[in-house]
Length: 76
Image 1 (cartoon, rainbow, N blue to C red):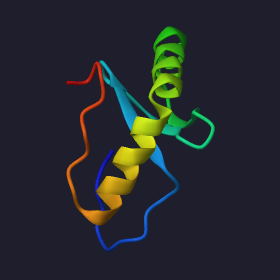
Image 2: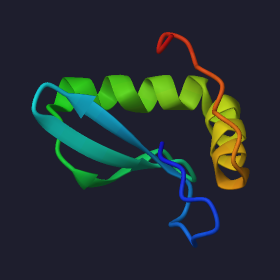
Image 3: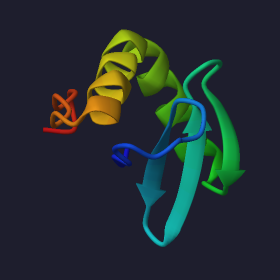
Image 4: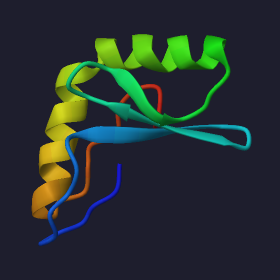
């Protein structure tokens, strides 16, 4: 996630990186909305996001107001 304080931002989403590939996932329904990941890695990201949905939304809301997000396992 990236902060854009005082700027309108898109719907809640996060970025996932795997090797030289980047994908963007919507947090509303945990869907890949742009980019490309191998199918296995896409499924892993989707499963991880479903497990951490509340934490992702908390971090999204923090980033919109300025504080640093809280690290989410296993991203520490």
